[in-house]
Length: 109
Length: 110
Image 1 (cartoon, chains in turn yellow, brown):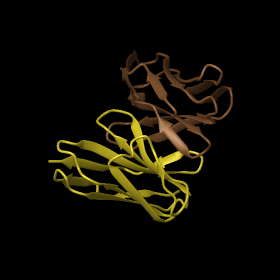
Image 2 (cartoon, chains in turn orange, green):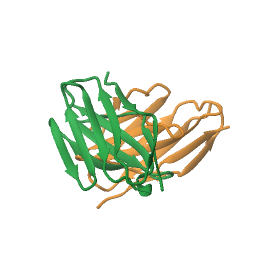
Image 3 (tube, chains in turn cyan, purple):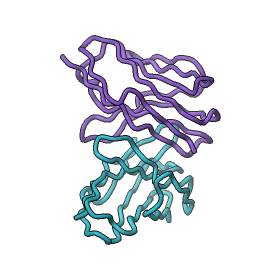
């Protein structure tokens, strides 16, 4: 089996700050994803990547950038953190099923 | 743009009952249909998936797909308190973009 590691686990940012979330997978999967989950709700797709150096916008890409410089890693940048924003960002990779990391919990003060 | 919707939003069932969860999608070219389960504070995990019309059973869980109706469902037989979780349906068109629904929160009362 493999694992998806997200760092940091918790991230506290200031309003207007640029924040970067990192994700590493050792499944050797080609496709990777970033989803946002607000408290107790469903998952909204921010960005996905079907191979190294590829980026595809999801339904919630505004306010975010992403980078896939290596097959094993996929990073997400919040370009300007919004005050009182609170969400969990989930990184995932896929062959047939989608496998998720444990998430980065973002709080903006 | 693919729209995926789940119903009901939340559900309480007694232990031992049958639970039925629903998912509708908008793109008739969709090819991958799956259910994921997320226990409180944990990451979502795949439960089961189906690729063509019909039914698939794995233990107490059955997934049923009707592409013509743009609908698939998950049925849980003999529901257990450990089944209490957020259930997410997922749909993919073209093999890469996977869109999830807004979730159904299930509580199985002992």
